[in-house]
Length: 86
Image 1 (cartoon, rainbow, N blue to C red):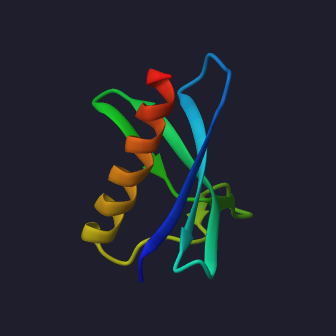
Image 2: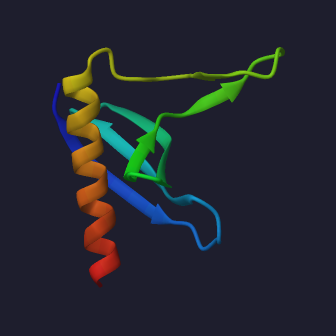
């Protein structure tokens, strides 16, 4: 499965969330609401999630392995950084 499009929308807020991304796979499947967050050790992504009745947050969609998560994070943060330079 190949990433065919990455779209990043910056958030104008004072908080830790800096942007929201959408990633398209093989021009056939898209995942929206991937958050770009500024953490203590740098920028990272958080997959879309929802709050459960017991107050915990559970990912709706997420990579199965760390290699795929790293690939997604790299692509999204590269696009985010390109936008910051403009």
